[in-house]
Image (cartoon, rainbow, N blue to C red; front, side, top):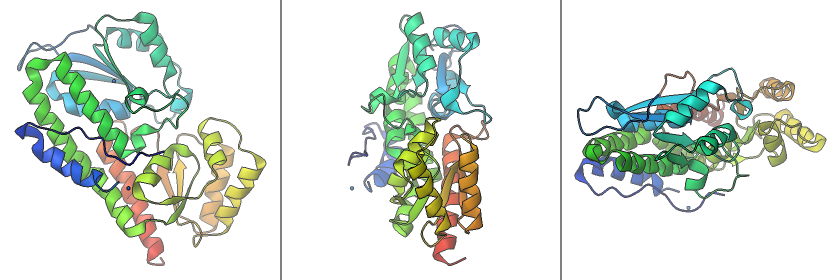
Length: 319
């Protein structure tokens, strides 16, 4: 479902050339309290921003820097974000925000319902699903695609400038710095994995890993029906369960790593994880939201990619 293009917006001002060039190198490798805005550099007022999830919140916070105040709603490592239920405090925060970032694709319908019901005047809403032209039924784990991340960061930058044009130069600087950090901290690791292990067979307990598998050129061999059912909180078919179990029982010569979502744990996924361990298949833990919550988006992603690289490299070395 990946389109053969890289969507990082071209940067024309000198302050962001470095970040744009660095990110462009990566992309060439692939086949949306009170509502206030700043009045200028040095103003005490800040743009009030709400991100439905902390992965988008981390990115917009890094872009906005000292000019914004960001509240990320879904960040608890002990819950499945697919099952999150809103509360009155969420409604107040979203209603009062000048800028709201949502994922879309059924992942945070509760936030979209609040936005629709309140209709806050002059509020800017960035819906990632709509931005990247995906359907409401698409795999919602867009933040696991570096291409969609770049699209979203570029849109966040444009929205911040439109809200607070007086601070455009500052946002240029932040955008350049974030692009460089995204490349250095995690996107370059995806290129490294693709160059060293393209085509290597890997499995995943659910669809959260599909976008990253595509970006790294790995062969995701798990039954699609199994991954989708687990992601949606449903029981996979007996046929898909048997196929997944057979993959694990075939051992690490057939599957080089199992990617395991630590926030959608069920007896079935625990059994798959146990089978992987029994047959010497390394397990790579991933999460739906940034863990720990105070980590940056790129450090979080970079850590997961480093674990993946280590597992694939150990397999290649026969360890």
